[in-house]
Image 1 (cartoon, protein in one colour):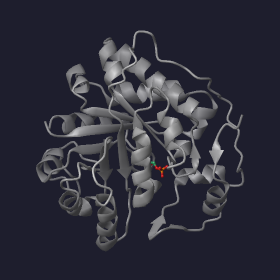
Image 2 (cartoon, helix red, strand yellow; image 1 turned 90 degrees about the vertical axis):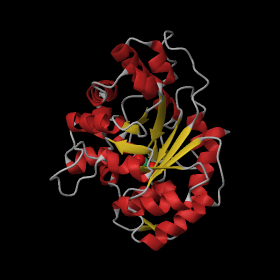
Image 3 (cartoon, helix red, strand yellow; image 1 turned 60 degrees about the vertical axis):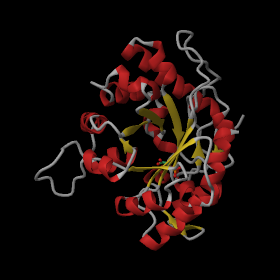
Image 4 (cartoon, rainbow, N blue to C red; image 1 turned 90 degrees about the horizontal axis):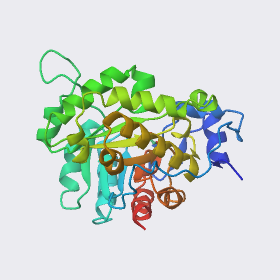
Length: 316
Ligand code: PGA
C-alpha cells in the first residue's frame, strides 16, 4: 500500500526552486519542502493501521465539520485579496462551518465582502498583551471588536520561524479566550524527524498539555477551541497524510484530552481538523475518518474553486 499521496511534480518543482503558479496566486515554498529535496518517495517508519477512539470517548456524530483557510503571507496586494474574497462570496453559504484567516490588512475587506455568507473571518495570530508599549503587537480585544471570530494560534511556522514556544502560545490562547467572542484554532503537529523516530504522540501530547494549560473544560465544551493537527512534513509539501495516519493522530489527541480533563465529553466534543496539503482530491477520504472533523487548508485556500470544493467535500 502506498503510504503517501505524493505530488511528484510539486515536490520536484519546489525543490528546484521554481515558483509554482496556480491561478493568479504565487504559492509560497514551504520550508518543509526542503526535507524532500531529491527524495520524491520518502518512506516513513511508522505506519498506522485503522484505529478507533478509546471506548470511554463516545463517537459523537454531532461535530459540525469546520474548514479553515490559512492565507499565510498571501496574496501580495489588496486588489488580489478582494478578487479572492469575491470568489469565495460567489460560493454562497455552506453546511460546514467555514473560517478564513487572511493577513491583517485585509481583515476589514474580508468582513465586509463576506458579510451574509456565514464565512467567519479570523486572524493568523494575536499577542497576549492587552494594550501598551508593545510595538507591532495585536491584542485579542482589537480583533474581537473589529468583528473577527477566530484566531489561529501555534501554527508550526510561528513555532519554527518566529520562535513561539508552547508557553507563549498558551498565553495567547488564554488571552484570546478571555475575549468572549473569540474562538481559537490551536495547531499541533510533529516534524519529520520526530515522526521518523515515533514521537508523534508524545510531541502532540506535550503541545496540547502546555498549549491548553489553564483552559477550562467549559470553554472546550462550548466549542471555543478547535485543534488543528498539522504534521509539519505535510505542510506545503504536497504530501498529505493518509486517512489512517490522520485518524491515528486525532485519536491520540482525544486520548490526551481525556487524560487532561478526565471528562469524556470534552474529548468527544472537541473538533479536530487535519491540515497539511489538503486538496479537493484528498478531503473526502480524510473526512470519512470518524475522528477527522474538518481541514485547515493553506495553498488550496488561495484558489476559490479549490477551497469551495474542499468545503463541499467536508460535508458530503
Ligand atoms: P498547506 O498548508 O495546505 O499549504 O499544506 C496548511 C497550513 O499550513 O495550515
